Length: 343
Length: 185
Image (cartoon, rainbow over all chains, first blue to last red):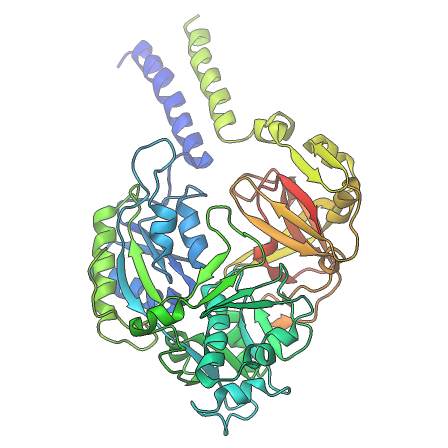
């Protein structure tokens, strides 16, 4: 090779190599989406089962790196829509969020973020407690609402602004008011313990609970935390006596719990019309892409694959795998739906 | 002559790569140059980053945690006390609230108590709850001594800071990409 050829090659190779390194460092080349990586963004109550899914799916698929990231369900979807991140699988704790937020065109295209979803699991609300909980030897499925009404009991739930389990907790207490014929129940357990007014209005069979902007209780009877992990860590430490939670989460943490009637627990399709009688209006529209009203409906978990997912085939394998494992009734996993047909 | 010619594409590529990599100076960053903060209270104002940087700055330790337990930080955060920005909008009366929002559609609301650094849940680095030390809400524009990057919520985001390190606060209030601050009744 002559000196002139060598120089010519250097003129080409050095700048190209430099540019490649610079682009890599700048993040303009997606460093996380190698063919073997699978980005899964999931609701908080799915993180424990999905951590197991990650390990087992990887073991069955050598070379695949499943990356799980957790958020509240609306934030899960916003990662792809509003924040324009790429993901292979989206999994949320409220199936209605997928059509509401993703059945719309991706910016600059005619293609929707998705046009389908797989409803794969359900859940139900329960009252979790421990041996440290006040009156834990007295509480039963028949008297739980009376125990939670006692002034020296501390009741916790997630922030309704941030977590579906939060506004579902409010719905549970309101539905219990009707179930047990005690018209003061919502006030005694929740509303009386906030300095800002929680407005409960009734029209016919429908009850609307309107929350203040800031959900900060005025005494220790009610405790609110941003997410389940903080609430349940308080419960285990004795900082609260009872937490209104998802059954699968309580089981996953080996907590004791009281089950609630199907007419209250938001876990039964049979009572779908009844659940619709309660609406929670959040204090402010935290996200401009979705309104502030949340209406009672059976809890249904859903998964989908965004249209711009880097690895759609692997994503479909993961979804099928999770849906199949869900049917096995694994401890800490939300139970499967009877009808698993994609909508 | 041939060597001089070879230097031209190399120089162009170095310049291009530097810009792409975000290594240009903060003052020249179009995202910072074009950023505007709308402040609305009894007075309405539109502020540039230059205006914000001209206000008295505060520095402290910031550490956030997501609703699912993912921690972000610790950071050394520099910015402007939210009270100073609220003052530019005519101040706040008891019972009023501060609505902080961003172009991605995210909104968070603070009350007067929080503006004074009270009413936040705080954790240690192991996410065990601890009594809250004095806190401040700031509009952060520098993180660990460098201008806040877009990925971290820049040019400006909310941060909740303390004088002591290792104080973790709930991340839902750390609004990214802030472009609007309003006082509401």
